[in-house]
Length: 147
Image 1 (cartoon, rainbow, N blue to C red):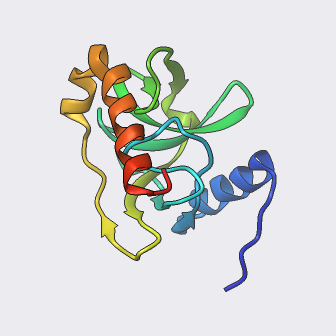
Image 2 (cartoon, helix red, strand yellow):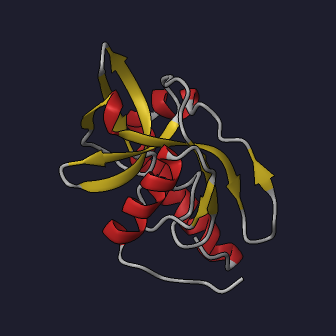
């Protein structure tokens, strides 16, 4: 299969449409906002149309005219609060109707497939994330791994 690189808005708009049609999509996310659990431009994610949303789900949502892949940290009525696992501050507020897909599987370049965790402990460790992410980056540099 050939690898096609498209601008984020175009690609994620198409991904959103495919999910809306009930299809599954495997894509390679960009950016560092979901590290250490999803490595941008390294890991792939398999997305499905969400049946229900729960705190801890990793979702693709439209926010301020662009798409983001972040974890749900709160739900109140039709409002969903999201934050990237690799972020130290800042949250996004979207409506449930803005959520296009849910990550059901993370696939490493080695072919390892894992179901995403709910990230409960990671969310509780928010005050310490700065230090944990620094250790993560240093450890991977020592091991010579791409992060």
